[in-house]
Image (cartoon, rainbow, N blue to C red):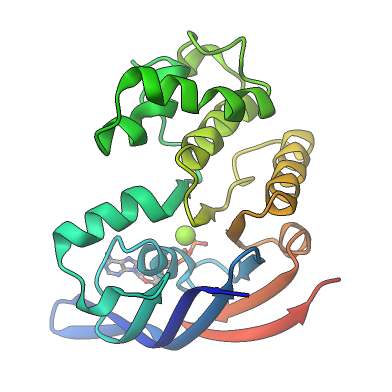
Length: 228
Ligand SMILES: Nc1ncnc2c1ncn2[C@@H]1O[C@H](COP(=O)(O)OP(=O)(O)OP(=O)(O)O)[C@@H](O)[C@H]1O
Ligand SMILES: [Mg+2]
């Protein structure tokens, strides 16, 4: 197996006035290629902060982070931009779709950002949109879709370009029970196809869909072991 993520003793504080708040405390996390990991923790425990670190969206104070053997702790901002765009597919809690864009335009956006042509990008996302049952919705705007469909668009956008990791922050948080189950079934399918998935949640029932649960409590990480 190859290692996709290796974090060693990551610390992160936020400065609040004269006080420094320690949010992540010596967090170490290893994720192998093809794993499906849930990061489970209560509100305020540091989940989104950790997601920002894994997704190379913010700097940490100390520690080492290798993403596909790239030393993130030493990487320059320009390099980090490329890594964010090419190595990671983000799925946000509230979809973050662009309302004035069509479904297709939303999905191809990361590919265009990295300089691909529209023709190539459109071709590239055909298979993904088909798998997600979006092929007859490509010219719709997000407001014309149900919540579950919007989340599927967000998932398609995260998947195109084949990122090393899918990083999802409460992907079912805004969905009803049945749609949430559909999204979880889809994650399972994607994982079966070989995608590495890191899913952040506060809900044990959701976390149990992953193969491995890691708990975050007050900024500290604990291995929970395998769910299966
Ligand atoms: N930019 C910031 N500046 C200062 N403090 C912050 C900042 N972002 C987060 N925090 C603090 O860090 C702690 C962890 O926040 P974080 O958003 O990571 O929690 P979370 O586990 O994702 O919570 P939730 O489940 O509610 O989304 C909280 O106490 C929060 O107030
Ligand atoms: Mg959060």
